[in-house]
Length: 303
Ligand SMILES: [Zn+2]
Image (cartoon, rainbow, N blue to C red; front, top):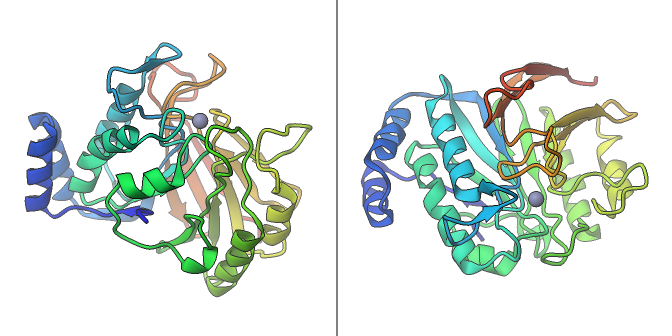
């Protein structure tokens, strides 16, 4: 179960890069990043990559593989090498085919060569069994989460709790389920020593929206009373937006790496820097002319 796509040692990376036909410049950039120390407080946050087997595939006027390729190059060029890269679901274009995950693995190869661990969450356009078989298994998630691909990613300043809201492939709403939520409660209690950041593909079902997480209320009932839960990250709606729930939990909607549904919204990713008591989020839009590109938002944690 390839929740974690582990970094590759130099020799293994070079062999795979040659097999995958990775461009020489990108191979060099990856090795250069690997030679710099990782910043334990910096994380690269991606969502909704929607990768198709065919690298030439265009959807809503953008080339999907080019978008992820551009984000990967930028992550490797940032001043601080992140401690990890997380992709919050909808890894695959539509129905999570074997070839989609093979192309995704090739596109992420430079990240692994740079020594950056990758954590993958599933979305409604993924297929759990084909994702697990299509990517090399490096770590088993906690078996107590049932068949779901959920796990804790430990960080120095905070821990990430990456959940699996995939219900039925290519059916829009998502659900965590009672078993995974019970696991989450236990996992949060076992890691109460530092702030908890929770990541789910589907957006909360609020304001009459019924295409997000159908058990939003049950999730919030787990998160709200645990005061060390500081932020809830989600994707699915292909928007960059930050709200705050009534209990003070930050609700962070990550932009899509692929296309936005609304032309005003950016494609891109978010660089997160964890600090004591706060998290700094910088939008990295693929279009540098986007008004939000490079803007930093500091979210102070609830107490
Ligand atoms: Zn999506």
